[in-house]
Each structure stands twice: as structure tokens, then as C-alpha cells.
Length: 304
Image 1 (cartoon, rainbow, N blue to C red):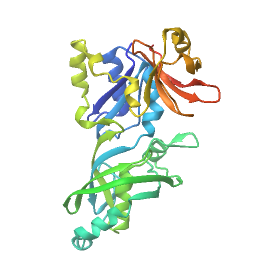
Image 2: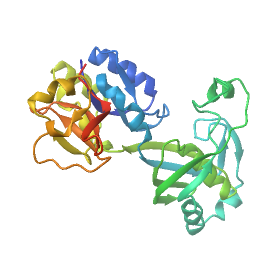
Image 3: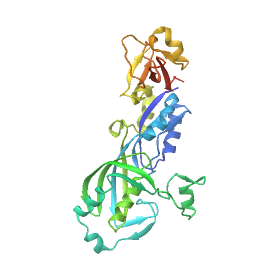
């Protein structure tokens, strides 16, 4: 069984669920989970967790994400992207009167935090029903605005009424809705024409692997070569090893007295560390408690 994360390049036409289903077949493994959906027509980074690595799914979902998006001004659709049913079109004069500086200023006003209303065509649930199921049935329900954060926003190219931009945002941000909101602010409407997710936390698009590439690696018995181990997700935490007399405690996920840690380690109260045995096998994240003079498990990643 594989334990870790694959940095998968999701191609257009696949849902995130499709990717997981394909990987179950490629890797002959059932315990797999993805870390946040991408729209079927969107492409880019989709970290997929395997075995004990599935414990990272919630953590990876919370990481910031980077996207490259194309915004087409002058349209609104029911899905807020170019694939939806057109609801309105701006007149030619209004579009012709737009200038780059005006558009740039309106886009950059979304830097920082803002209240975003989730789109009807989304997997969010209201009263137990997914919004997209209600939307397909012709129903629209009230959605509460949710706080999101746009930490970086960069205009890459103007070809009005098309604008390409890069955005780094918090969990729960809909780029389709950002495009819609920009168009609304400019009073001409806007839809997302294309979307590429270029980064999720430490996972970048230049190292993402297509399903075809993963099938080839499977045939060469080399999937393990590209499987990212769970401890790689915690590069900022110090690595701590235990002596042989503490391995059993480590294997059972027990608290470990400070005097059983490798010599020369000085920890601060509340500090979290990566715990290993002397062979370098990673077991989990532990936190030091100075009062008890021990480390306590926070999240275990025992191989399955």
C-alpha cells in the first residue's frame, strides 16, 4: 500500500472525483482522497493522498492556492464561467469605454479580505442539498457571504475585454465568483473563461504528473519514486529522533518522556516536531510539554 501524496496534474474534462477513481485503478488501492475540487474544465495541481497520507486531506485543503485565470468582461452566466447559460451581455459602447487603468484599479480593489457569496453551481450544501443540484433543478436559494482572503493579485495581460491575472487566495475562494464580482464592479459583467491551478501549498504545477505519466510509472513499478512522503508537508518543523528504548512508545502513539529523545535536543514549550525512529522512519507530529517534560502525539502517520 502507498502512504503519501501524489502531485497530480488534473486535465480538462475530468472531475476531481474522476481523478481519484482513475488512481484507484492505476495504483490498485482504495484508500485515496483528494484535497479540494477543481471544476471539470479547470486544469492544474490536485494533490491526492494515499494510505496514512489521507490524514493530511483536511490540512492540505486549508492551504493557500495560486491560480492563473482568464476573465472575460461583458458577459454574465448562470455558472459564472464561460460554459454557462448567458444571462446578460454588455452593450458594445460600455465595453469600448473600458480602459486598462480602470479595469486594473477595479481588480486590485479585491486585494485583502472580502465577503464572497458562493455560486449556485457549487458543491456547498444548504439544508442537506448540494447547491448545483438545486441549480440544475432551476432553483436558487439564498447563500450567506463567506469571508475569503485575496493575498496576491497580479495582472498578467490585457487584451480587453479579456484579462489574464494571477491570484493567491485562501481556502473557500471561488475564482469564478471573483471574476463575476469584478465584472459587477465595472458594471459590464464578467465570467471566468479559463482557470489553471498553479500551486497548492508546497505543490507546484511544474512538478505535477498527468494520469498518463502515472500509468507509465506504474508499468515501470516506479510510483514510489514520485510519492511524496507525509513528513515533506511539514518542512518548518524540526526533526527529532527517539532512542531504541522509546520505539515501542512511538509505534503505539504514546507520550514519550523527554529523556528518551535523542541527546542534545532542547525544545520549547508547545513546540511541534516531526518524530522519527533511529532508522529515519517518520511516525507523526508531536508537541512538547515542558510541565510534563514529554512530547505528546498530535497527528500520527503510521504506515498502513
